[in-house]
Image 1: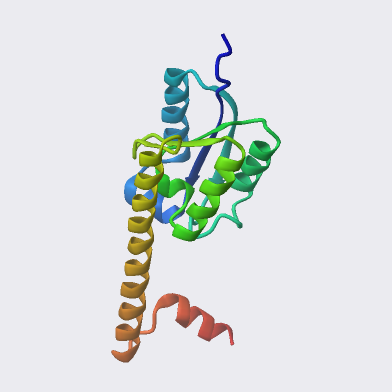
Image 2 (image 1 turned 90 degrees about the vertical axis):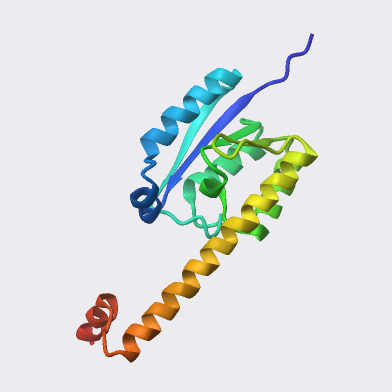
Length: 168
């Protein structure tokens, strides 16, 4: 009997705002994902950590890029993350990632979101979660711009802007 090879790369990420808001540190994510891998009988190849980096795009995350290289080299065939938004919040990036995963016979498993890309339903569900994450980013961005504009019109200069003005 040829048993399926299950070698995982654990991916953990925090941006400082996420860590402050939701309180899941790199250590907490790693601990939970190690337990998940043990439960699912995945051999852990490596833990990839991106600290203080946004999920807006995949290009500017060194650990994430290293994990994809290891996947392309056949070192891992499962990517395990705590939540989908640790991996990406971009619909476009998700589509690229799903295509790359399929090409290399690799699956994405997200503990909290119960995501598994090995099925059509799993791929559908992951797309819906990403659409909602992207919407959340865009709404927060709009609110921030609206708030800054209102503050400036009212004569309040935000600290970061007043600091930059003083440097000139």
